[in-house]
Image (cartoon, rainbow, N blue to C red):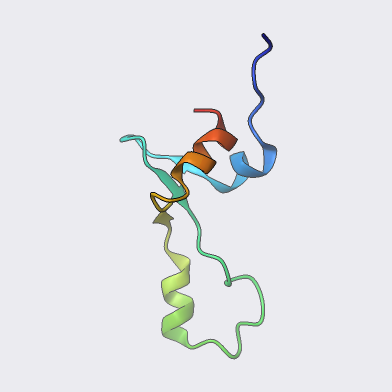
Length: 64
């Protein structure tokens, strides 16, 4: 059987941590920022972990 390729979009958006968890960025921080509060924009800057409900889907895309 041939090897399964990693999804190009997923490899650009997700990063695996040393402990095996998957990091992601927040959405809604690219445009239309004037109506969003400073606190909301600041909280969107930080990375977060992929939720447990989406872990199986993301790991399939990354072929881990």
